[in-house]
Image 1 (cartoon, one colour):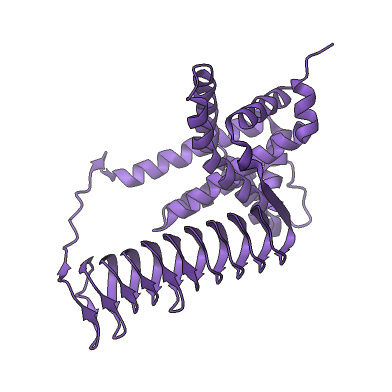
Image 2 (tube, rainbow, N blue to C red):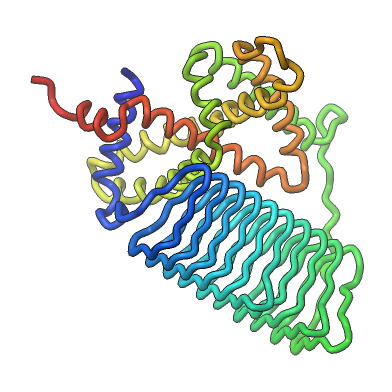
Length: 387
């Protein structure tokens, strides 16, 4: 009953607070999603493999294991996957995250890419600014304004129109590179500027500031924080699975078996949240509702990582428990998954893991609540007054 009430309130907020035009979209999900025909709406797609080859007159939001977009997109692109490839022209901004990210086409405005390997190919063209962060960042395209690159190894082989800022261990500027402004970088070694590279401004190496390490009881503060965070997440997970075991199992199963779907829903809700709150605060009546929605959102996003921990624990226990019945040990799966997540958070790009965990966990919660309310049919029935 409480789930139906929450669903009804959220649906009412979205209907009242979201402009009518925002509901013009097409949603596709499944093991393999292929959009080969043209659309005049926004496209939301989730699946193990998502391929978009048709023209999309709107925005594209996609999540999965492999996301490939070769068709023209007049709006922007938001994508998260293990492997992301953008090979069709984009009319606005590209925001992508994944283990391997490749942009191979023209982007009219800005491009934001986060991942382990980032490739901005020679045939690409960034109309304004480029922000890329990864272990390996390779930029061979033309960037009309500024490029901000962060990584372990950064290679620049294209043209940057105004200025280049790099934070890396190793920076290489290839002979084909042309920087029309200044180059400012911080690296462990001097930049490797190859013969033939053109830098019209000045090149400046900025020393990396020494970080003073604060200690608490003899231990580094980051270590103490990681331990306390892991314990807090473990406590939250154990409380949730104890109080709501069936619902916790359902949500963790959703996060495990339909990860791309959960991730996409989490991304959409995360982006819609500030818009809805801004619209609600425009009216006096909507301010208390906006505060309540903000409180629910803030209180739910971080703890939702516990469901991802439970799903991760289940995956790791399958080989160990083959032939045994470990399906009822939610506490064990949460404990094991929390330890793994805490170790992943401590990696150099652990914040990416944390972001994925929060978005997929919150998306799984939203999908479970939606299904429990019976979708639009159940919600509208809950909103109708009793006879």
